[in-house]
Image 1: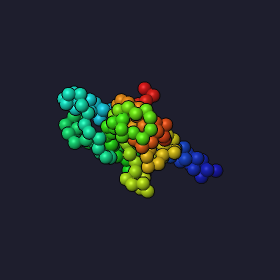
Image 2: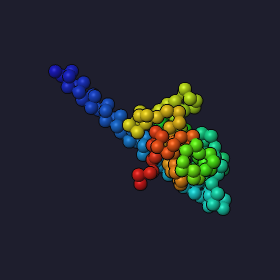
Image 3: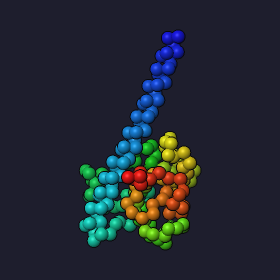
Image 4: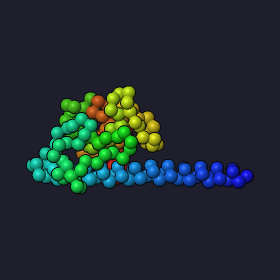
Length: 158
């Protein structure tokens, strides 16, 4: 009986730790994405309203001057990396074909090498999926996918 009670308490504690870890990662992601957004806005303000060019699975050069401590953050989920998206209408494969500015967290380094978070919102994620912070435009997981493709918009519900 004592062993059953200890086992039950241990499972409750482990579940609580797992939930707390998920909440901490989500909170960290929101904060870092907001900091990057602020840095991009300051960059655009200093560059006649122009955002930096798109980069592949990275943040744009020159943005570190606008980040706290001049440091690019690493994404909070293991295997994830921040990615700046500056997609012109012609870069998009599906409508609406409007300019998109967003900061994404990418979870794959190659089509067969992905570290998808164990989060409820990432259940159907694949290579083209992302968690993203929409700066402006019809944001989406990937430029080659429709707006409703599996992804997680961090700030769309705000």
